[in-house]
Amino acid sequence: MKPFSQFFIFLVIVLATSYIDAFTRNDFPEDFLFGAATSAYQWEGAADEDGRTPSVWDTFSHSYDTGNGDVACDGYHQYKEDVKLMADMGLEAFRFSISWTRLIPNGRGPINPKGLLFYKNLIKELRSHGIEPHVTLYHYDLPQSLEDEYGGWINRKIIEDFTAFADVCFREFGDDVKLWTTINEATIFAIASYGEGLTPPGHCSPNKFINCSTGNSSTEPYLAGHNMLLAHASSSKLYRLKYKSKQRGSIGLSIFAFGLSPYTNSKDDEIATQRAKDFLFGWMLKPLVFGDYPSEMKRTLGSRLPVFSEEESEQVKGSSDFVGIIHYTTFYVTNRASASIFPIMNQGFFKDMGVYMISTGNSSLFEWEATPWGLEGVLEHLKQSYNNPPIYILENGKPMKHDSMLQDTPRVEYIQGYIGAVLNAIKNGSDTRGYFVWSMIDVYELLSGYTTSFGMYYVNFSDPGRKRSPKLSASWYSGFLNGTIDVSSQDTIQLQRKFSGSSSF
Ligand code: NOJ
Image 1 (cartoon, helix red, strand yellow):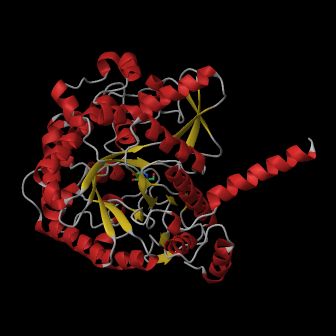
Image 2: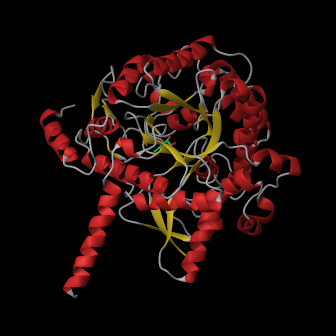
Image 3: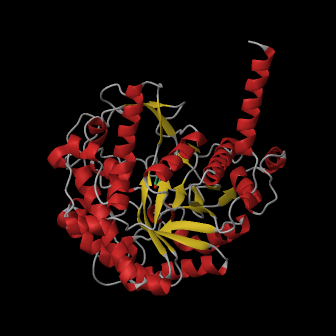
């Protein structure tokens, strides 16, 4: 290679890395929100205290040996200490969810005064520390009573019950909550819970990998997804009619979004990638923005895909003030027929999607490869194909083996890279308004229980007091947020050196 070409390549690499790496908090708009997240079942514990009743997640976790959320981080009792940690860290926002069965133990009907008080206190505590609450209404924890009564999300009755639950939340908490997400990662929730049996309530067709007690993987994900869109739209309509003018908040739906990139530059792979985007993003975003499902999905699924009436389509269209994005990694997409990322996912949604997804690195279920460019691609795609909606990145973070180390340098690198990608996207015109690390502290993990964790605070789950200790990532995020870390400089390395002297569980 000629010296000039070598120099050119070197320059490109330097420019590419420094473009992503050189930034501070001040490069982001002032009203951009940097936060961290948890969810009720994963953080609160106190599963059968003060009137809470079981959700499908309690039932699901108790039937496997990955542990359960009975105690989790004990956030229900330690929320004041945790809010103090957040404030010390300089968090601008905290995303948490409301446990439906803590607030309304029967799923519908009377409110539990102790549950109500807990969330009022939590929100008050956050506000008094200047931390913006971002509330998710539904995070995998359907009241078990509603699952037993009519099958939960696969029945249209859920629309009325969910809207009534949302109504209580808006009425009781809405004066102090400006950001509402109705349903957490609705896309993958419908797929994993109603097609793959991987997450609660664990429905799937009979298969040789997972023994689900009920389900139909070729229809239920689409039915559940449809009811989620309608329940979201119905509560959004209610919010706008009854509360918005006074409370002045925004309401959105969140979807899970892998980065997707063609495996080769062939036409076939490009088409396959577009197809994957239609299935994985368009499934929910097309109805939310344009009022109907992607034609590619309609064509492939035929009568398995429910149909919106004209009135429903009008109600769903425009019902999200923002799009919540849950992003962890990227896959290459190729036109090879069949299959999916995980072998069990060969029966429903992923089979219908009909493309092959190839890991970008060492990604496995528990070890996501950091691919900030993939998130930039998602944000660019949403800008171009969905009228540049306001976006919150509601989850992004790195799983590592629990009990591994407080010096979680790979997590710092991961978060740093992704925040840089968000900044790039904003500079390119994306209307992204916030970024939340998953998770604020180690929690009971959705797929892996207590074996892996994403937290910036370590939690000793063998300690009855659930002692918390800051990891390097907590110090880094704090330094970034209060402006003492300039990402382009040596600050991170210095922080790492200082930290290694003081790290112990
Ligand atoms: C997805 C879910 O929202 C959350 O519950 C889970 O723990 C994380 N992302 C990590 O998988």
